[in-house]
Length: 264
Image (tube, rainbow, N blue to C red; front, top):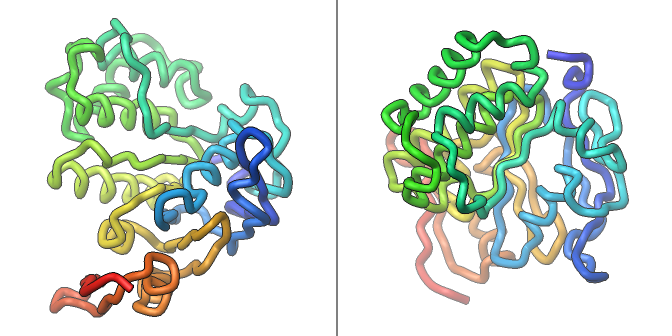
């Protein structure tokens, strides 16, 4: 891990939007340490994906995003790609390569795989596919996969790059319950193992509570709450942001449990 990651991720006064409309307005986050996973949650149009894309350098933005003390805003995408990997919500269609070929390509395009030999690259790519649980799809064409399978293949491409900052926009939206749990648990485990920071946009509050060291609640382009799930997901915050009546407690296993009773 390079010196860039030493001080973690800091977002200060970040603003971004589309077509002259500001969607994220002056967002600041408490520092995120290496090895942590944070989730961005909030209702539709809260600014979650816009914030993620701004952090990835894919949108013009003002303010500051630093990783390990180095400013990311305004840097060329080629330079950002050496440290930051972004997995979009919508994946490209019509790719004729096999799953294994796309993962090997992602590895070789990253600092983690620049010196990898052919056999080493194959082994590392297969190891990621097996860890996700899709080793059996390695020789299948990307264009032959279901939406959920393509989402898992895209995650493999992101993880094999071993980024310092991993940005995932709703990575489980097309997955069944088994793979939702498997993917989110794996991302958190790898972040802790590698000293990587993972930022995930999620709609499922229960999933966010399960997989995150911190949860950031957004509404109308502003941060409403940030902290451990039990502090960021409360009946008061859910009433304010989602306009629902809810109960939040812990089950017998200590897991945060969210029950929505009615709309407000």
